[in-house]
Length: 305
Image (tube, rainbow, N blue to C red; front, side, top):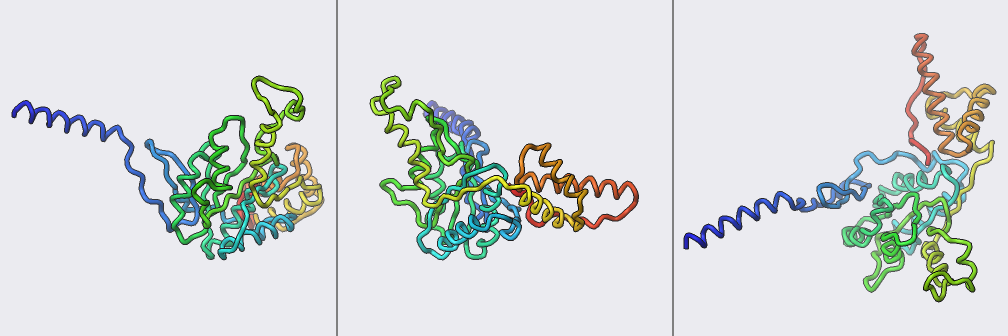
């Protein structure tokens, strides 16, 4: 018996050591929040509540009337329990794609809309996330920003399953809204358009090309965003300056905005916001140095991206 008791004691000591190495059990998500990010810590993955999500409003986004109307209508259908589509927002950088999705949360969170941000490298966890929220009363948008894939990415098939379902039906309280700088989410190559040219052991290379295109087609609503012209860029820059408390818009301010866009090589809402930050900040600093009071305030919405 002494040997048996010693064996039990050694086993208990071993289990204690193993418990130290094992990750702690995941805590239940904080469902009082309106937005979460899928994160990893101490060997486990979980929904991390975002206590201060972006406060950008739909009214802060300009020159996007058509895109705004379509995605607002789709989201309104969704929060009221009517059929709605997954949405793919594609186009030029800095033209308001991700800001539009964030603004939807502020518009519809009183109606039960919630947002879960998932990075591209975590898309393989989408089925797990869907199961977490399947029985919740809220309506969840899974937000994938700057989405694209390379051949063999593990998240590609996981996203297809969530968009189309597998043997288990998709959850009716979940939609996917994704942004991308390109319409087709996987790279295509010129030789793939030549069905008579065979590469390696591929018998029907055209089928592979169709597979790459098919992911985009699983989004029921496509919204395209285009680079702003000069007048649109200047109008957005002027409105961001007004949000900072600078109401003066003269030739000097206009030239400064144009020079800033030339230095960045782009005209977009993001560049307009960055100009407003630079201009308002430098002006406030100069006013502080001369002892003057500058009537500035932080913008209501935050970065337009």
